[in-house]
Image (cartoon, rainbow, N blue to C red):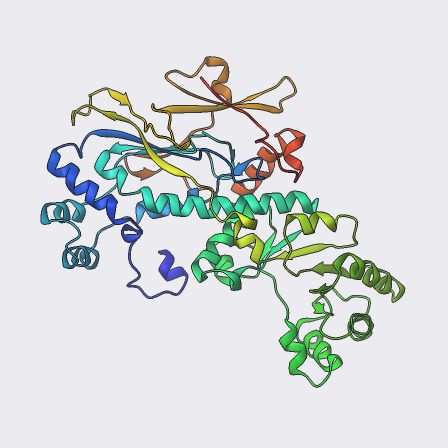
Length: 443
């Protein structure tokens, strides 16, 4: 079943082949005419720098990239569009009609962390097969990794308290599903978005908004209706009118078994302390406090001393908490001198001003640990990897001969990220701005 079916979208949603910038296809056409399209080529995805204030990046979206590569097909409707717009010529259309990616893809396992220069994805095939994948790969990885990095920082700030992803109303409807997935990888516990729960198995939560309270003739009527329908373990929203009176009513109606109260406005630190004291005095000592209201990692960290049990985060999460992209690029780093499959690869690299230079060559990567097992450097090199680094190699085989080798459960990806993050230096746990927590060394 494809994504369109799972999300209830029309069956004529375009294939991933049109998630492509036009110049990918014009380059393809020119290379086919020049006889260079079949040269074996290596493209790598990396970023030259982390977003300001970030001390590590998070690899997210790899599973979606694998789906996109599999679904990269030029069916008749897509070909007719390209023909009608005269975007490419007939020989190129004929080539596209038979397109299937038949190459290899290696990459950092999803959930891993990365640093400037990390070759986090490597695509190896003919130039023609690999170049057309650039846009869709970057659009997925740049978005998902940005959200996952924000989620990871928020997870650190929450200090083990659960986080709820609530950003579906603050972004594109399909981006919301991808953001939920990325947030889960970064350490969030659940989502309010049902499409994300359906598509990826992420736990879903949700009870009521202010509109439900305003619908009823009184707050008492609203709370009674919700408890009658959803049970005493529900979460009641207590800041529509007077918070103290709402808490009193909530416990009166639901009893000490009330699951939680949610606070969505005001001075959350002060209000949370007052609500906790009131709940305890009313005998509702097990009732949880959930806070929402435009939270980011800094707001969450400021509530560390508050009696808060869970956080709901929306806008700042799905927009990458100020950094909605990771500035990843997809660059040709090596290519053969002819179409002969046995022709040796030649390292190539862009040279330019403005800090946009690249390092040529097919790269390996390893994370060197210190004597205590804490990571101390990201080592990137070409040629043979030193034997002592082999146990710490980072690139894994994802696609071979066009066939996806494995698809990992999202819980496994999430667990990997939390474990990898714990193996970073303690400075990674701080929200303070600074350099990447690991230096990148080039061998």
